[in-house]
Image (cartoon, rainbow, N blue to C red; front, side, top):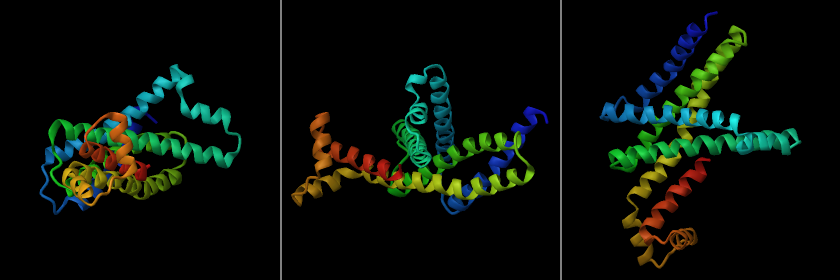
Length: 224
């Protein structure tokens, strides 16, 4: 079958679940469509960032963490756990970087709810771009039954997983954005978290800023 035609089919299949999820999540929300498109595009760019890293590693394998795992971990169980963890770290890092970058340029997040919803939009953009590649690879090497199974699984469970992970980060990122009052309250209560103190000391920043970075890091680690 023509390669270009397969890419068109893969893209069409990838659009369907994304359109359904976007409708379910945002149908009752009065969100600026341009901002949603921006966050969705950021999620797509996050996938391209991952592909860019893979391309870089093909020329400089000494920096490839997956190759290191393959060469140094012989146990199949530990190998798959390590790969799973590395994929999670890589994907969540690039997704949160896109959310942070877009927000820093547009100041689009005004509430914690905004942060969660826009993170979900970025997650769907990531799932959309990722699914195109998965569907294409399955179609060129598998039967129609396997294509259908892959479509159902990645349209439901995988898309949900991306949204859950990004939603967790979005919640903590939203808290971090409005953290000055929270950090002041902690000071009044005489509470200084050791993680905040460490960040404050290491980066020579005010307590409120250290508290903000601490909450972002906390959300990222839970998502990972």
